[in-house]
Amino acid sequence: MKPAMTSDYKDIDFNQLKRGGFIKQQGPDLFVMRLRSIGGYLTSQDLENIARLARKYGRGEVHLTTRQGVEIPGVRLADYRELIAEIENLQLLPGACGPRIRSIVGCPGREVCPNGVVDTQAMARQVDQAFFGREVPAKFKIAIAGCPNACTKPRENDIGLQGVVYPQLVVDRCSLCGLCQFICPGGAIKIIDGRVTIDRQKCCGDGACVASCPTGAWTAGARGFVLYAGGKMGRRPRLGDRMFNLIPEDGVIPRINSVLQVFIKYRQGNERLADTIERLGSGGFRELILSLSREEVAAGGRE
Amino acid sequence: MAGNRATKRLDITGDCCPITFVKTKLALEEMQPGEILEVLLKDGDPLANVPRSLKDEGHRILQVQQVNSDTYLLIVERGKGE
Ligand code: SF4
Ligand code: SF4
Ligand code: SF4
Image 1 (cartoon, each protein chain N blue to C red):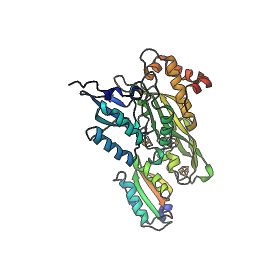
Image 2: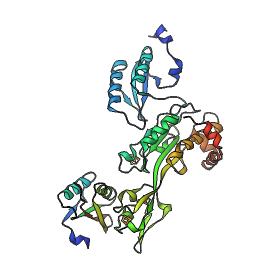
Image 3: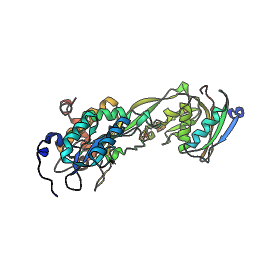
């Protein structure tokens, strides 16, 4: 049964619809309403509201997406306007689909996870604010992990951010307890002749020494994010390349912007970022990023 | 040396997280501030996680010794907290 074009349908705001989040599903006149979280958190109030919307407009169930979103299946087109108005009222966040910057995935980070070395949630909010929903030539995914364990799989995303902290030794605090040399995962720390030494080449920046050192001799030196670019999954998966080793927190947004500018400028055909980087080479792409002028980066930005 | 002052010894080599830390925490709670606990544990997750959790709770690792290829001995001073 094909639903007729009733007047209800003509009221639909196509600009609103275009921003995404409302996706055709199997079955006549049925849609999925996709909501997003920022970095994977929803408040208990959000959950109650979502539950109510799913009962009212859907089938009383939700599907959890791989990008930390919540989808309400079984919604009718005729209910779209009312549903989107309720969503706005309740301050829930619609998701995105199509060639846009998708929802920002994030692990709990240092607020919750003992391994975390950066505040992933604050970064997720910043990145969401700056980029979510932006129209770009191809779908574009960003994930943030709080440490080199990379639980949110940053390298499977167009851009992946991963927290790192590089340690600094305050020698006179050290009690030579021996702990750091045993727990350093890369074997970067050795105690030689009663002195703690570090081989920076072997340090992965997970901050285990800083977190564990009982005397506070290991302190956080440089803290920031590694940026991976050019990852994707799908039919031809590719892991992102390590483009930048240490971006300070306040440098992340401009850096993502510059990756986008180079992608938009040099993309050919239907390429995803992964394909463009594959064609130009990781080093070549990086050079192009570094050669962008300040103005170009700023022009691509938004408040 | 510090080992001689130990008032208690705990073997958590057969345990995995979070039992490792919970047992260590309970043992320390039964002790007085300043007393010494020896903890025998495996490398990998226990060695990576127990020391940093002890630090979070205000206890202090005085010494770590490698007992054999995959087993370590922590010498812990009970902190002043709860
Ligand atoms: S990536 Fe690191 S900080 Fe984030 S959840 Fe995994 S272990 Fe914790
Ligand atoms: S863990 Fe800290 S106190 Fe112990 S040897 Fe290493 S730097 Fe020194
Ligand atoms: S940050 Fe991690 S890898 Fe680097 S020296 Fe410390 S424990 Fe070793």
